[in-house]
Every structure is written in structure tokens, then in C-alpha cells.
Image (tube, rainbow, N blue to C red; front, top):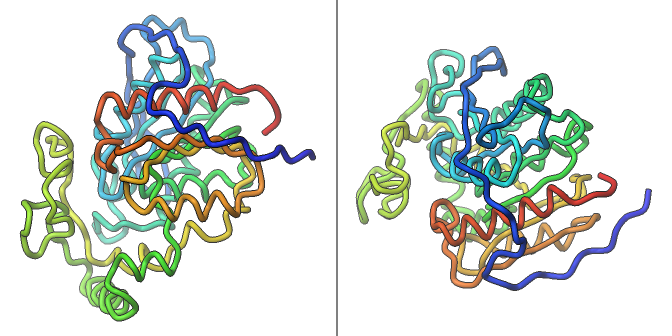
Length: 320
């Protein structure tokens, strides 16, 4: 198999693909099984779609998120560009079923990777989906999950990552208080798991105590991410799985053409660059200036530019 050369970085802030936006997309709910749980999903289609199979993208979001947040924003954008798009809630989040013992709100990379794989398999059975053109789009924390769920997966054609949070052990220590801070959080995780879970608020006002994200902004703003469907919960039992997961390591495992949209003003761009440096196939990059992590979730200009890049990448002809 010929390995394409890496494509040059596209350093522009504006849209890179002159797409013709369709009318507002239509949607319908569906459900599927993963790990013994029933998961809740949504299929987005171009307005007036006649039922013929379409190229499809499965969209997953940031940690603690539900499908009505940034996944739905990108799913609607992709449907406007002529794709079928799928969102869903992971096990223990949103409208989906609980983990064993009724446990919820655990940020489990292993479970979420399994859920994406189950979603891919189910989506391949939907009549509106072109089974030869299923793709993945991972946003923030789920970027790593999407990579692991699609690597070696013959049902998936291409992958795109927006504002990807791709950490390794070095970045984890730099982000979470060094080796001592990481060890402390892992101990918190083990104690919480032994107790059957310890749930705290996911988001709170600036400076709040006992909160995962005491930073205000997207998750705490009702006009942005603090929508009624958002759980706003975090289970401390999830720390160990999150901190010991290293998606920036071994990027060569991904065997699909890849596009990445990021910004040096967003979260851990160094993780994305490390991933790209070790990636063995073609990669298309769009680095937007001065776009923050949260702006990638719902800022119209940033979302449109990212969606244009993703649409162009997923529409590209050629080998997987």
C-alpha cells in the first residue's frame, strides 16, 4: 500500500472549502446496545433528504458532555454540507443507560471507545447510511477515543479531530500537578470506586471548591453549554482511567487518513503536534489563530471553519 506524504499545514482562519449550505437539517432518535446498556442516539440528515444512503460521520464530544452540546453543533453543520451525522450519549451519561450497579458520570476511556465501536456497527445498519463511507469526528477528549475506536476498523473510511485533547504521560503530569498530583488523583479515584462512586459537580463558577471545572465559561453558561440536558456531574472514580490513558502515544496505530483542526490558543496543542509527528499516513491540518478550546465548541466562525475543513477531508477521494 502506498503511504501518502504528509500534506502541508493550512494556516488560515477563514473557511477553506466553499460549501453550499443546505436548509436546516432534520433529525430522528434511535437507540443501540453497548456493553449491556441501551444508548440514546440521534441521526441528522439534510433537509428534504430522500432516503438514499449518504456519506456519514459519527460525532463525539468533550469529557462530561452530552450529545446536545458540541456534538449536535457539528452534526448539524455536517448535515448542512450533505452528510448524515450521528451523535449519541455514552454509557452513564445523558439519556443513555447506567454502568453496572447504577453508576454514572465516569469518564472511562475504555467504555467510551467500546461505545464508539458499537455506534459504528449500528450506524452501518441504518438505511440512510452509505456503509462504504462511514467516518469519525472526535472533539476534545473524545479525539483519542475516536482514534482508538477507528484504528483497524474496516467500517471506517476517514477520521477528523477538532480541538483534540491528546495527552501522554508527560502532558498529564504537567497538567495535573506533577507526579505527586497525578498519584493523589489516582488515589482519589480508587477510593471513590471502592465506595461505589463519588459524584461532584462537573462545572461551577470561577473559584468554586469541590468542582471538577471551577472555571466558568462554556459548561457553566446557560447560553452555551449549561443546557437542560447537560448532566453537570463528574464521578471521581473516573480519574485513574483518564490519567493513565495516553492517546498521544503510538499515533501510528491510526490507519485512516486524518484531518486535525486546532489552535495554539486552545488546550494542549503540543499533544496534537506530538501525535502528528508520529503519524504514518497523510494528515491535513488547519490551525486557527486565537481560537480557545471552548470557542471550538460553539463559536459560529470557529465551528464553521472547522466543519468546512472536516467536510472537505471526508469528501476526499482515494484510498483509506
